Amino acid sequence: MKNSVTFLVILALGCGGCSSYLTKSGRQQAAYARYVKKQSHGRVKLQKLYTKSRQRPIKTEPSEPVTTTSTGPESVSASGSQ
Image (cartoon, rainbow, N blue to C red; front, side, top):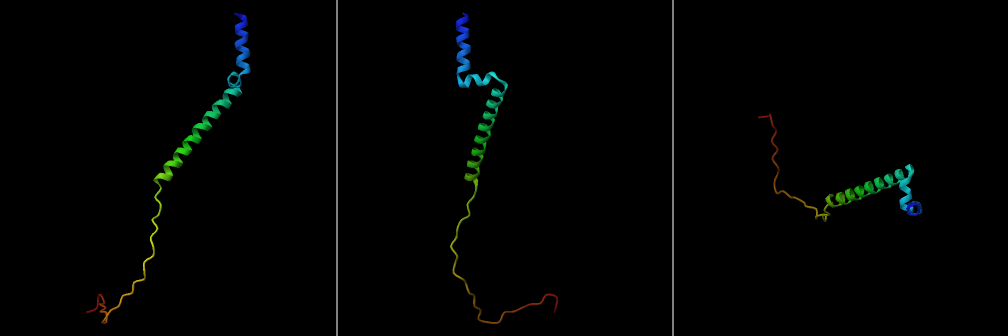
């Protein structure tokens, strides 16, 4: 029984991922790694959503200039004078 417990302790300390949870700093580092992973995933998700919803301006070709001609004099009416 004592040999199996000793073997499990040595196995836990030898395993890189398992031993990190045994110390306070290891648990803090793991929590920070989870936080960073979660935040970066959320940022990528928002960037994809933004690029999909962003409306791109429609490029229109410039039209030919339009000139207007009139055949007679234009009438101008002054408001207030009779």
